[in-house]
Image (tube, rainbow, N blue to C red; front, side, top):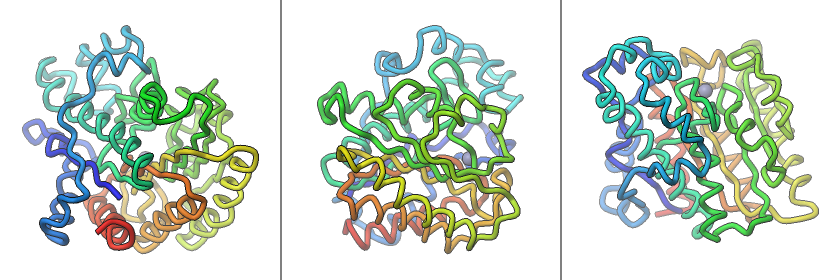
Length: 319
Ligand SMILES: [Zn+2]
């Protein structure tokens, strides 16, 4: 097992990031908890990105016109749902907000590579599942998931016809991933989300999902878990029946938490841990390499949920 982390992941710009409910420093917080728990032993599983993703690499998924739009403060402010950003100079936005996301995107690319090599990897960032090739939204700018898959294909780590499973349990529907893979039938999408929440209007994205599990605020934590355990195994069996699945990306948003400001669901901390372990165990049982990405999580507790999952995974598979 490998943990991908860079100290460049955290996003901060003079405290203004606190105006958004997202804890943009949860990456470093989760890492420091792991460091306290495992000490120098963590070094043996640590993959450290040595640069952010480049413009040329981003062009594998995004258009040049879209990357040009990211130079307009008002555009970025809308994508981040943070109006104050529109008033910041362009270089500050790029350096303090977009660059950490490019480090996180590189982390997702490395996590996919490490998962294929080692069977299991966690990027302590990434999972920007609302980003589309031509549009950023929902605090997601770069389509790291599609870019990681595309890069693994280009570099020969995945065969051109290799099947990929995308499993998304973030509270929000992963519409950007659906749009990016709209015509790519090698990718099979399982999405379990709050169907009354953003981006519920995106019917094109919902039409691309291979296995829907729709949840809403009325569901209890136990019902949430039951929905997952009743649907995921059958999905994995169905997509691997005629051809093996050679990679899974698990988008493990912690905004399903009962204390989360944006997810509007009722899942307990214990069930978030149980959920993550269930998904990863189901994949490993079938011999499918898995790269886990953090995605959303808008409570001050989010880093603790990440820590609990990664600590247990390390105890089982890593250290
Ligand atoms: Zn979310």
